[in-house]
Length: 239
Image 1: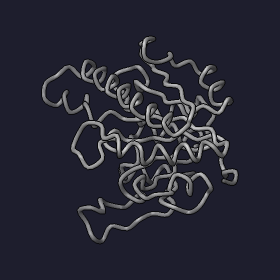
Image 2: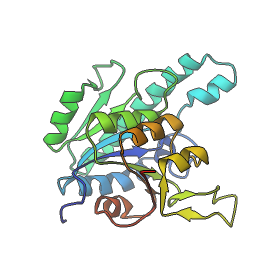
Image 3: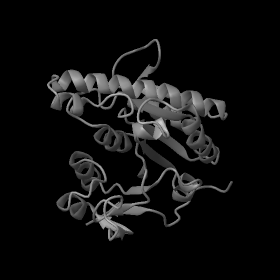
Image 4: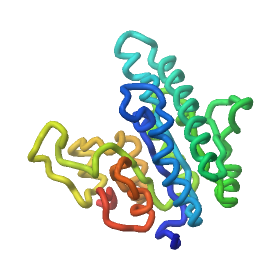
């Protein structure tokens, strides 16, 4: 494969992507499909960091709405992201991709602690770094963790892989007349609450001029196309 447009990216995956057609849990076949593509793109020399949500296993905010302490629920959600990270690590390594899982919460028996300089060193050596346990703090989503890690690791862009093919002015599943944006500004994303990522993540990206490319994970080849700079999905960029 030819060299990609970007040199280093942060790929944000939802936990739901790991569930496949199931409502919850981990579906190895679903993980295997996108792990193969990630491994192929990594083989071109593109340096990749991953942040994965935990919504397929546990959502702290949902538990909080039902009476659980929010901080306690968020810590449980962080542990769910570690489980997802280990599942993705297994799938990537079965595709010949060298990986490291690094966690914001200490759990040395299953993963390395997240240390920025060590993560950069792994990426320089061609390893895919899977950043788990969010930021390590409650009240911050994995979207915020993705923006934070992307900036810390000097990534060229955030790739937000979702179940839809870009950003729309309204939910395309519910509204047939929903209009897709090819490009949209950070400020418009915030003002119209377009749901790309949470407001903290968008604000961090805006303040540091970090583009966010939103595309459909389930269309084969989209990760490669995005890495090559092809026009797919929606780009969230400068105001």
